[in-house]
Image 1 (spheres, rainbow, N blue to C red):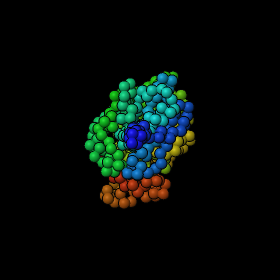
Image 2: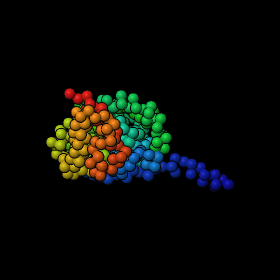
Image 3: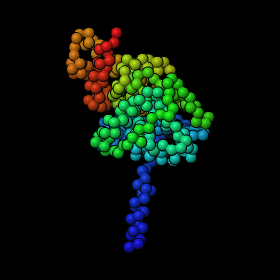
Image 4: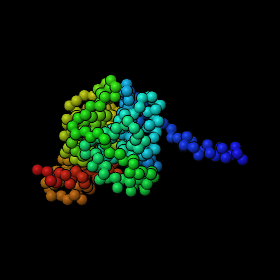
Length: 304
């Protein structure tokens, strides 16, 4: 009987509940990425749908987005420990969406600073009630206010972080995918972690400004990078060619909406007709396209 009790006790220890380490690939020296599949966030995938990972310097590690669930955050932390004995010093959230921030709590400990766009804290505070209320219902995960951690360090334009012989340049972008987009550039490997400013295969999702996003793409495509990491999709080694499908989708949508506005067409008409030629070019088109048209129409309707 005593052996049975001991055996049951061992089964109930946290070690037996330990998640496996998140699968990551070293895409460039010291740059580790978990590339996710394209899914609608639901109770099967628990919202774990974004590309996330970390960058290792001589002194410490920077997390780039913590994952779509508290469990994925823990799995990412284990992946870091498997890759390096160096401590985590920064958690960089590229924007407010749940698939990028729900793992934050896994890294909340002494010495870790959270970093984000200067508008991120406001976006988190505004959306937290909705996010927290829907996490269980939609994603089958338990999320508390402690999982949504606002930045200790806010980026207004650019900010340099040194991980030890490894400088990261963080850029706060104008409103585009969201109004709180942040990118991370690693000088050592000429890698741009662009997050959700770039979608491949997965249809782009507008939650900010279509005009702003188009302007940011025009600026970004003038530069050349050895590696670009999107928020959704394969890793990119052919920049800026890989940007063109997203650019074409947003340009086509903006052009067609502007034409319909001039013709006096309604929002409902636009939602039913804009951008349908792009349907076969993108995964999750049915889930996101109509919302994109709605957001873009509301913005373009009031442009000069």
